[in-house]
Length: 121
Image 1 (cartoon, rainbow, N blue to C red):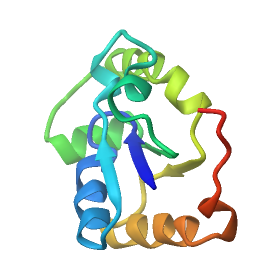
Image 2 (image 1 turned 180 degrees about the vertical axis):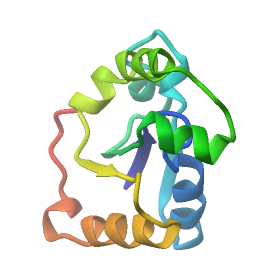
Image 3 (image 1 turned 135 degrees about the vertical axis):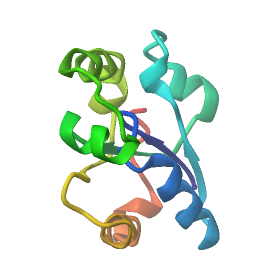
Image 4 (image 1 turned 180 degrees about the horizontal axis):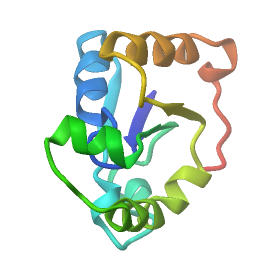
């Protein structure tokens, strides 16, 4: 099962990808937020499962040690619209630790219906 992970900068995509890979999952963090090609995530990964990690501008700025404006996040979210629409699982990571994010994603991946995900993506 191939897993794509999308979301804005600093939502936890790369960290989740590494943690899932350590557990044997075929996971790929997709930097869709930097592309104007709405279907880039499909073209690069062709995933069976799409996980969307979200974060607000305050969290992003704290994690990245930046001072980005809300308009920067708005543009990332615009670029992520298609991916978000097709996500199988959505997780707001603002108040979660790395361990919390992993635990919630693993719980989702262990659900019985995940073995035969919808072929809508």
